[in-house]
Amino acid sequence: MKVTWKNADGTSISAEVAPGVSLMEAAIANNVPHITGDCGGNLACATCHVFVDADWSEKIGPPEDMEDGMLDITAVERTQHSRLSCQIIASEDLDGLVLHMPA
Image (cartoon, helix red, strand yellow):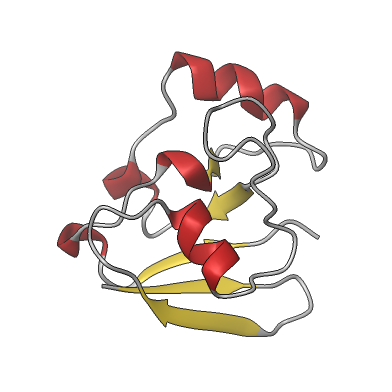
């Protein structure tokens, strides 16, 4: 599946991501700026904060309780489209997904 990360400076990075891979892992593997995943995807750091494109929000769905709590401590204020990319797992249903990076 293809994912595109749009940076605040207007540039973007697109990559093919294998099903089952977290989008945090995919971002790190593709050198997406501002995604560090310090906790390794264990919902303990919020350093993989992204904004799901509005066209994809319903398909991705809302965060679960633990993720929702972690979104309150992100470096950039959360929005209704905020998610932690470690909690979004690549699947064919998400082919073409667009994620926006915090500034």
